[in-house]
Image (tube, rainbow over all chains, first blue to last red; front, side, top):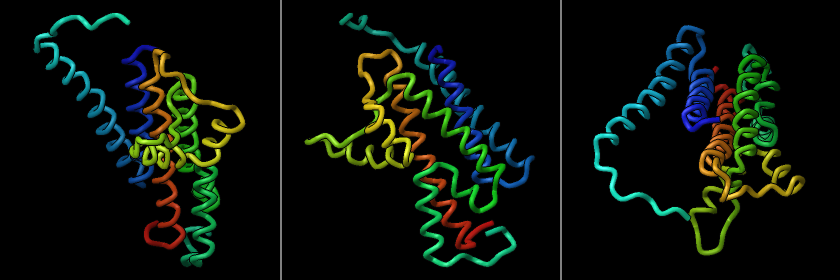
Length: 63
Length: 130
């Protein structure tokens, strides 16, 4: 699985876990799941694009 | 043990908390929250299997590295699976594996999530919440 796929899986697991742990009503659970899931995935993508604007520096040495 | 009953005794609440720690989501099953327990079981199982498949680090205390003790407590939060992986399957993880860091995050998260379930079971048993 790609890094992005693993990140999406991780966000989905955390979203489902905390939505069921912290909320009782189905509607509230879905809302919290979406907030956590989209916050994690969207935040990571946004941070990735922000880092894209920074100078990359020298290439990392190949071990 | 259902929602309509009074708070359980401290002894039974402790027993349920221990059960919840040792067998992830078993505490919620015992308290008759089967749907929630099923979701928790799936989430923790997927996190565990993904972490182990990626050859992530299953923390153990390392001399001279005090933070590994803290991480070990977090990883041991997954209960029986930690000991099955560590003792029965001799699982250690592989620092050279491509998914090592991701796998470590999944394994550690599985332990920490189960610790939160233990606290939730305690609150449910003592009627601090419904």
